[in-house]
Image 1: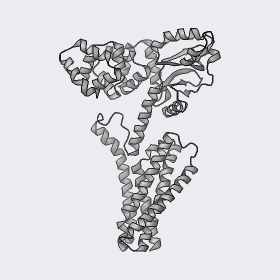
Image 2: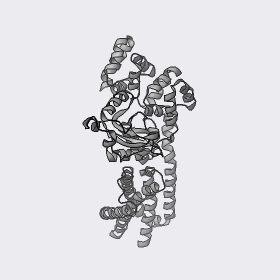
Image 3: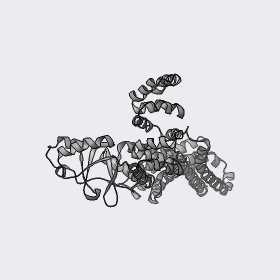
Image 4: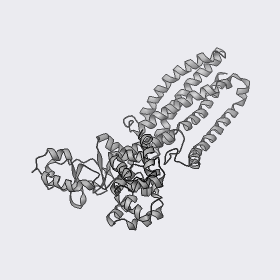
Length: 445
């Protein structure tokens, strides 16, 4: 709603070079709202607006643009201005941006950035992509254990302007080893003369710097934290991951799973911002294997050509039979991939899941097989309808079990279960469904 209402006024202010109005736009609007409105302008006009406010406000607004828009905007900046912008950004956001820029450009920028920020950038850039270290921020509140609550609150007042969050305070010992945590609420409620060592929680839930970001999401979600500490192999605190970054990861992981389930390689940017050739490539790398699977399906049909010619009615029900198996397999794969991504299936992995899907498959197969038998009676003799009905039952059971097994197998092999996309499950079900169909027909006829 805001872009449609405010964008015309903003364009008018740009046309009139109304610097006072542009400054008010930046300062009065909430940064996410300002970014949403500015996203509808060309990069040159965005900077014409932002140059009317302070650098800190520019950064606040800039960080709410998506990465594709950020890259478009920084392409219009010279080295000096870009280095000042990056220097002011929060550590995790600037590393996300720098990871998308050309490495030579990053190396040219770093000498212009202050030593402290430059060291922090190099450290965060060194962590593997999608690890806890790559998504953490180093702007956290920390205190020693031997001070009083009164002194702790005084120190927090000084730290607060440069920290992403001060709700959790991390108690550090020698060599920055993580000894405990205390919340701001606990500090406020504690007696002023109490020592932090007496009120802090010592059983700290943390993640390792090399843990996968999905593990970080699970830990933070399981314990309902606003932030979770990140430690190295010596239990030294190196950063924190905050809930807002986790929400971005959850969205990113959900998008990736949705793309893969539809047999599309995940897009880095939105659909409309991704070049057509990139979209074609990311779809094509899945369509080619699926085409080969279709060729295998045709080969299977060719092996039973004699049976099909002798009993022409068999061909009428091939679409129904393989569709039932493919649909059942896709349903099972979707359920299991989602359960695995949310770690819901930890208590009934492997054989338990297969047994569960086997029972579900039998119940669905019996119902669909009976329905298939009744529908087929409209076209063929009862003994032929029995072949179709029994095949539908077997194919549904096969599809349900296979759709559950393959995502679990992929996870056991250390691969993303979502790689077992619905079209791929359906293609494999088609092949096995035809084999079952024609073999049942051969045995009965």
